[in-house]
Image (tube, rainbow, N blue to C red; front, top):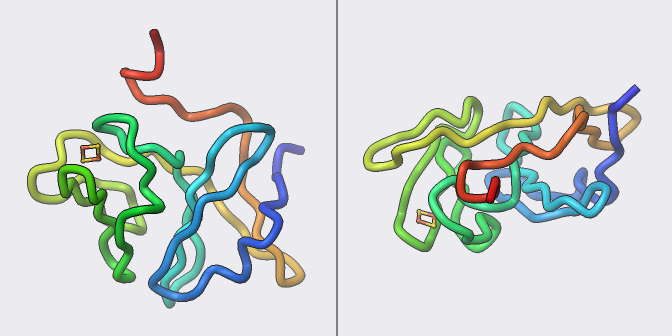
Length: 111
Ligand code: FES
């Protein structure tokens, strides 16, 4: 079993997002009318915290250089050159869990 509870994530408001930590790893949780979505906390472009960006229920935008992604799939939009990696989520008994086997990393984190 690698479903991990994201303590407090159920309190994220619709069309909003917040950073949490699972086993010392930053996780961004975003929410829209369809549910909850999870990604690495850092932007795929450079080391910026996505939680300082915006989430409008359809798109996530990094405030550093304005790359954008489809919230529900992580697919890049516009000038974004790389997809957001995603973690599966589930809601159970009013709590949010993510499927977390290992940290998703982007190329710049692999050094
Ligand atoms: S660091 Fe996020 S778009 Fe550049």
